[in-house]
Length: 388
Image 1 (cartoon, rainbow, N blue to C red):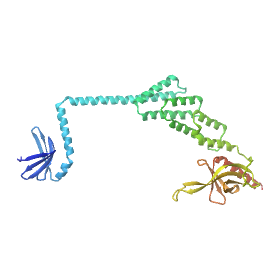
Image 2: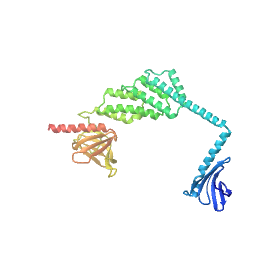
Image 3: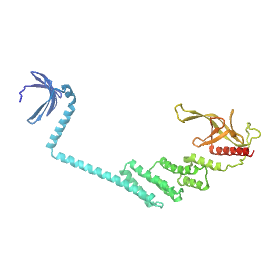
Image 4: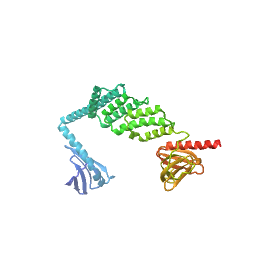
């Protein structure tokens, strides 16, 4: 055991120790200190109540680093010691903390259980009223649903409640169109559910548009439409309470398809005031159209093009050619057309020509109808050629 005499003075939390061999420094609080002796050796000194401990750390770690890095650790140790002393002086405190923690834990557990039960009861009631029941929900059922919904809103998160209502609503819509026909009873049931759930109108419209578009694609796949398919489409439109604006593009194609089906040879001529018509030409159509130019977006692009308007004017279709007239004329002879491709997405007709690798692009309000008309006229030309 070594005997040493020391003199020290404090400057804040730092203590300077004076001895014959030089000046040492230490940092800490009551009960534990870390420092560096005058010889540069780092140490830890701890103890209280007559029992002390001192341990040299060694000279491998610079004393400056210890004084910079360990203050936070010392403060935490001192805080732990003070808490331990306080708890030993107040033995009832740990018990109180445990009881309070247990109490709040039980409250949280009960609230979580109540949240799940409230949401589960609401979901079950929705399923029973709209998915497992073939009848229209009565007033008592509707009132019960609203009460359960309010309870679920009180205990559950908005996201969880929205998820339940979205599932029930989407399932009901798809169930209503299983037979591709929406009955009056199904229409009323959907309206009742819409009056209860707190879903945004945009979501409800998207779900209904989706099922309408599925039927629409089935109908137009063969480029034909019959009276039964028209009834199904009307049933979807009115039974799902869809606005015509919401499916405007689809209805435009359907109306054009119906109009196109009425085309057959011989076509009915029309009168026109256009001056560019030759004497032996017979006019079958006149309307607005645009001639487009196509250009690649960039050299590296693969099949990606940008279209620009080359000429916009009056489209005239005769028994020999088609013309777009406006301060100049774009002409295309029917006998030079090899192929007709109708692009519904862009309301465009693409004509492949016999004597050119560059197609002709014409944008029109009714591309299917015009494509069919031109195809019939080309058939007529070919038939006459064969007869000769």
